Image 1: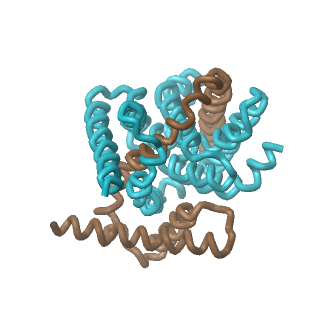
Image 2: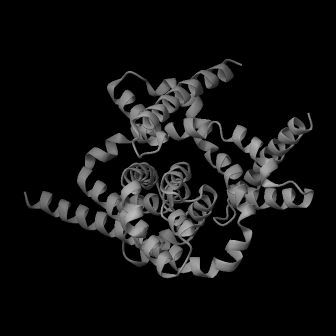
Image 3: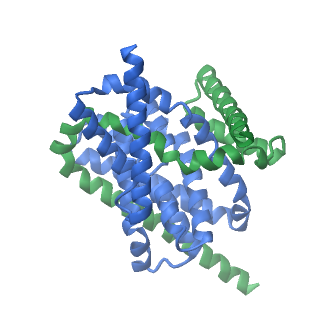
Length: 230
Length: 125
């Protein structure tokens, strides 16, 4: 009985914290203050303060993440709605997405390895530009840690959202299609939300890039990541 | 009330696709995430016209809007890894920042180059 009460309590803490941090993030509109970052920090502090361990939080986590799989499958819908975009310039788009996704994964893994980080961290850093639900799955398949992978995904998403548009402008990448795709490949959902403010076209491109990069990387990850780690 | 039932029904359809894709991945030992196969299956079903996009919008709109909610309970596990980030945090900076710049410039540069040369060719014709 005490366990059920604890599960309900941890779920309530999570939902309420998310709700409040979302309201706060919508008001402040700061790329650094995402609901995910705010809520996770707040929940960890609350749990530590109350002396609740992650082991005790876990049953609630299983219940709360039950719909993550179905929601991820739902990502096919925006991709389907924007499919006409792909037809305009199929090969330039595809080549751009694949090169960017492979290049970022490779540099992240190689540099992390050269920095002398543990192999668990190097494996978890690999899917950092991929949308979180799929990055988690890739981390599971390649022997990384899902929570660490999410941390890197969020860091990359936040960094890309903050500097992406300026870096692209600085390097004279002004084509709206190129800008949208670059943001989607780099910073997945967070980048998509940011570049959407530049225009519908950029936003739709970023969404397409995010989905295709995730699909492509999950196909090569089980072979490519172990090969890079060798 | 009607919308709640619609949401549950549509979510069940998504769950069914997710669950069967995960099962296929499991029995066939395909090394891809079940959710990715699920995305491909759903995209195919939509393209063929077996599933209509209106059948799913009531569920996908709120689910995708609040997608980041699902990562919170997963990220909370970081409380077990706090020390690691404090000790090794500085080593992570370079790989994370450089690979972000590489992604932006590779995709942005290649697409812009291919599209401009593509348009120039179109112009010559």
